Structure formats: C-alpha cells, structure tokens
Length: 600
Image (tube, rainbow, N blue to C red):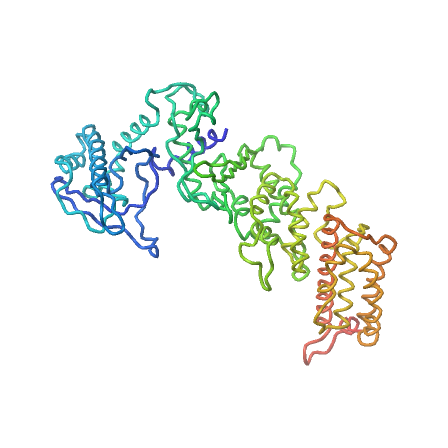
C-alpha cells in the first residue's frame, strides 16, 4: 500500500519529478565539447561551502551501483569514468592498480556513450561526442585540481547532453537491464497489479544524509533482502516482493522528492524524518499551519471552530474525497525503517489536529487569550530549564516524534511523557505555559473523565488534587503580598513537597499564613480581605479530604490547579488596575459621576 500511494502521488506530480532514474547531484566540472568534436575544455564549477547558492546542481543519470567492476552512468559520471582520472593518495601518488582501474572505467563509459551515439545518428551533439571519443582518452591536459571523484557533465554548444530525450530513453533501458537480473523475470506487480518485467533490486536508494540518524549516515534501501535468512523460503532480492520497473523507480523518485522538500518534510532533532502528502497533491493551509514551527493562534481557532460545526443535511454530497498520508522513517545502517504509516481521509486528519490544539490550549492571564504551542516547544518543555530558556537539545530523545505520532493519530502520548515532565517540573521548580499545555494534553487524553480539565480556572471543580494546587497558589499570593521583597518564596521551598504530599505541607503553610495575614490587615486591608476570602473558600472545600500522597496523574491535576489559580489572580489584578486607571480623570478634567462612584 505504501508503494502504491507513492506511485499515485508521483503520477500527479510527474512534472516536478526528474526523468526516470535521474537524481539531483552537484556538478563539479563541465566538459564543454566543440560542435565539431575536435576540441574540448574543462570548466571548473566547484564552489566553497560558504557559496552554496552558486552550486551547479541538476538531475543527472543515477542508479545504485556496487561491486568490484562498477558500471558507468550515461554521459554524466565521475572524472574517473569520463576522463580516466585515477584515484590518488593524499600525497598525490597513485598506484598502477588505480591507473588500470581508471582506464577500465573510462573504456566502459566510452562504450556506453557510443551506444547512445549509434542510436541518435540524427542528433548533431551525438556526432560531436563520437568524434571526441573516437580515439579513446581525450588528447588534452586534465586540470591538476580535478579529482577522480568529481562529477563531470558533458555539454555541446549550449545544451546539456544528459537532458536530451534520447539520452533519457537509453538510460532507462540500461537501468532496467541492470536491475532486472541475469534472466528477465515477468509477473504480477504488487503495486500496479499489471503483468510486467520485474525488478531484481530497487534501482534507487534514499539519498545519503536525507534522513537524520545518530549513527553513520548512509544511503538507505526501502526494500532490501540480500541474505537467505531474511527472505521467505531463503529467496533473496525481490523474489517475494514483485515490483515492476516503473513502480519501483517512480516510488523511490517520489520518496527522494519528498525528502528534499521543505514543505512535505519534518526532520526530527535527534533522528528520523516524517513525510506527508495528500491524494490531490494540492496545498492545504491546515497542514501547512500544523507543520509550521510558529502557527498563528487565529488560524488554530478557525480550525477548531470549523471541526466543531455540525454537518448540514447535504453533508453526504460534500464529503471531501481527499486523503492524508504520512510516513515516518528512520535509518538502520543501509536500510530504511518504517516507524509509522498513516492513511486516513483528509477531514479525519484535520479533526485530529483540531483536537490536538483544543486539548493543549492554555489560557494566559497576562494576555487574556488562549495560547497554543508547536510540537518542538512541547517536546522541549520536558528538557532542562537554564535560567532564561530551555537548554538546546535537552528534550528527551524521540519525544518530538512521539508527540507527532499522537497528534496525527488522535491518541494519547506515551506514558513516559508524564513522568519526564513531572521530573523536570520538580527539578526546575518551574511551571510555564508550554509545560502546562503538555500537562493539560496528557490529562485531557486520559481514559478517566475526571482528568479532563478546562483551559482556565474551574471554580466548580471538587477534585482534591486540583483544589490543593489552587490552595498552594493562594498561599503563595498571600506571602508575596505581605513580603514583596522576599528572596525565597513558598514555591522555592515547598512546591515539590506540596505536590507530592499535600496534606502535611498545606496544613502547615495554612497555619503559618496567619502571620502574613496579620501584616496584610495592617498594611493592605483590601488585599487582606480578598485573599482571606479566597483562601478560606478553597480550604473549606478540601480541608476534610486533604490527600496524603498524590500519584503522577494527581500531581498533574495539582500543577494545573496551581497554574489556573495564578493566571486567574493575574487577570483579576490586571482588571482591577484597569478599573482604577479608568476611575482617575485626566489632568485638568473634572471627574464624572461614574468616575466618583467607581473610585469610592
């Protein structure tokens, strides 16, 4: 099914794909052949790493090759094949064996190029190449800075020879002959369902470096069976996985196209990559927004609202036939590892993304708006806080991929996420918006409805853990109002103890708050009254049922209750400040009756 979806997508974006069995490569040298074929000059197109924008890169003939007698590519190949440049050691010396191998490779390259010449007799450029190669190695000086591994492309006049239709056709025939095995095998292709010539091996691997990996980077094969123990009945290669030439080449071309696309690819920070596309191959604003590192809150809210609308009576006629596909890949040595495969209707994918945002959105008391966070920030919130920001690359390994999997499938993140998050909250003594968002997501996707929490303060909640968190937040506010310049706050000293064992800690802090209230009664009577009412209201709800110990999920509810109460307190203070500001008239303007009433 995966190969089928890739080939279907390839049919829709055929104009964006390179020619069959072509791959994007950097060209280091251009062999500019005169139109009469009697002379040629080598043009250096190498650039330093700082000038990457000046690199000459284009699709050229390519197929995976290995072994001791490596075959050539058609026209575009290394300098060893094109001009017989032998490999050299670092000191510039070369062995006779390397020289002989360079001559062999050039001869094989020359024979393949002349095959094209014989089949394209009416092509003027072909005759120029024939004259140039007629006497074997070209009789001109090879540039001293040309290396055996450098890629050399041929040009006659203003035309790249590998872009000619006759070259592309012959190269496709050559690859099919090489990858079809010694005896051509025909049968039913599992991908297209037609009787065609079958591949012995997949012709094109995934490009080296296209998939991040913690180990050594290498080219990777999607299907690779090269040992009898790996294949059914001891069969190797693609005997038990019949794939025709067209489907195998097209699927791998699409895979490499997606891996090179910034829009359809998300590389994980540790290892692995996720690719996504849709059946219609058209841009989709919702998917672009989700995979963007900084989505706009207004776009997210529009998505949530659109998914919550009840379908009308004509909904059956308006069903979107589009589909969403996502492929998560890793790399193990030279083999691709398919970690996840998603094939769902596009509307279902959008519903999953809308639910993802709705489940983690947190209300911000400073702005009075709901905040949403990109995947990387949620994953990094489980990393180490270092004073002003999270330490780079401190997110637990694989967590970003786990969160992405949960978002696309509409499921709960793995159980380890809550443990990792609580560990960092206790270690850093910090509860910020990204951590609160991830915590709310984990609880909202719990099978227990009691764990599902609103994005802002729920004054009707009777959950003891949630109330304990609110109680601790109010006690912290009492201290900060009474002692605004204190260096060590309640959170610094008692937060972890209160989260784990609220009964002992909160009763002690409640009793100790009397001294703070005494100071507030004298210096800030209004704050004393408001905080005392708030504290007693919460304490009376939970005083008879203060839990002695909280498990991980209950600790999560405690932390959310704590954050909700703090955000609500911030919002109330801002509202009071705005009312006070509105009650004070501008200088030289008499106060109105309403102003005097508010002020009183």
